[in-house]
Image: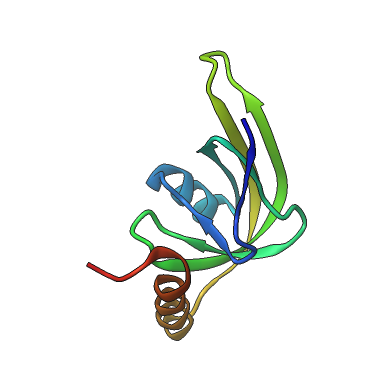
Length: 105
């Protein structure tokens, strides 16, 4: 049992529904498996489940816990700062593949 640190610039959604709620309502949350540390108060780049940069978000809270099923999970609450422009999406996505996600398939 330990904490995995998220990169300062990456907040990757695994659920389309969680991403939709953030973009639609300006605030949202996501649940990640395992105990993770997110940079509360900082702005980070949010990525779609398909690894495409989409927005800048501010992390409001990061809560690591063991849920009722006995699983280690981290809930991350965030607010939308702004969506990225097309050029920012292209550049940030390319950088993320080089730095975090590995080669494109």
